[in-house]
Length: 586
Image 1 (cartoon, rainbow, N blue to C red):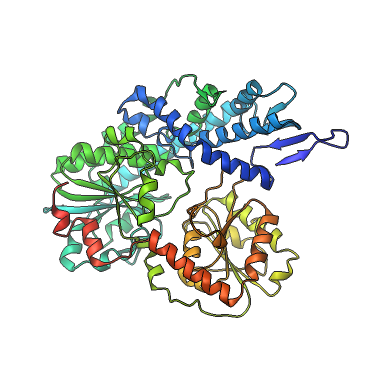
Image 2 (image 1 turned 90 degrees about the horizontal axis):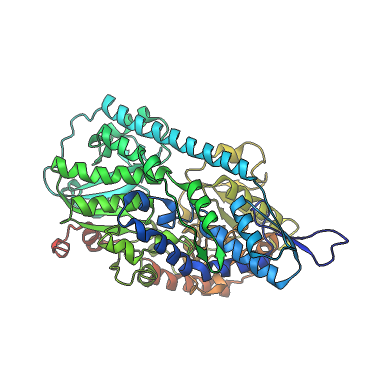
């Protein structure tokens, strides 16, 4: 945020870019505009950096090469640097606080000497933190690989035989609660199997990636007791494959060159960001998926079609490279089954990735309006509309929203602990003293994977006593809601389709991850960079009458038409390669 520096420093301001405090609304909005402006130059920078490495998979499974802005901080810091440079050029800026020494050094080089630039970390502390982070990632990788290798053999499959006929393999994520009573409850393709006959189900196998698997003994007991078709990588991977993936810690080291970005000397910042993020769990898993594809080929498993949950992250680069290398005659469909912010840059493939065999043959998006954005940096990308599995309930909404008394606010929380606290605190400040919300009901929906005890124990997260924690189906909760608060989640778009105005919480000194397309009617959404923004948005929408709510419901239905393809048997058969049309070779 910007703060005045005291009674004698007339007009001089301090800019804090560490995220410890939010930016003021004007500068937060300016940062969002800069992020939109820098998307293409940043993608071009990564493309130039990638050129010397060719098809080197150890490069492409790094967060930097993948443009994974959730993991690699480079894009965010470059946006912050451009914001600082512009504010300094306007005058009145005396001091800037940033979070790393490389960003501080770059700004000292670029800004007038009258502007003091400080780093929250000294170079020594940054090196120590980075080294400890690398050691932590190495220990986590050794634990995960060791646990999977050992317990897959201590608890072997019983009564399962390798598929002998060609199968469709569906890549998905498995969570600690995904297997209940011997059944696999998939969260990413709900309703898929229900569209199939018994014979068709027999030819569809899940290939899960484990999320937050800590207890490998319990994990494999559940996996072995599951009645569904599971094709586990651990039943094919060898010890050398795990060693190959762990070897990325050595092979992935890079001496990255000096470079310029929009007139900024960014070489040191580039190397700093790379060091902070490389050799993460996504990189290791990507290399394991590459070897998994190879071992399936060697084992004689015939794949008719591969459906890859596709965010174009590190893991996807490894997996898709493996599928295309070892199963060249099998069509690979990359499924983007959610909505993401334009600032989640890995979701937008590059021409160089297509040329190197890192992209699936076709990318399946959930609706027609999502096809062109997917081709933004890769004009030759084949894109098709696939069933919107997670959003099929939106097609069963009635034309009229159910009536109820009072004003109900639904707050959907993210997985990240810091962001959860930030949202709850902002909601508390926004509602405090707001007459429009007297008698309101505030419902808080935690992320399914968030430890609920953190919300229930004490008030350290900002949860207030009169707020209600809710679970269950989001669409059902939205039908009872009048207003919605969320962040970087497809839930914001679900609210819009329900005709419920959505307030998207802005980032703290970082670009906002807003999943709502810009063409959606602004009456249905707004980005809020602080409690005052949120207070105004909630008060404005709380005053909506019955006529306005009917209009918003109709507007939401029009959004649904453009973003979500219904789930039906013909569409699912085509998606899985089980229909006659899908059998035509690609």
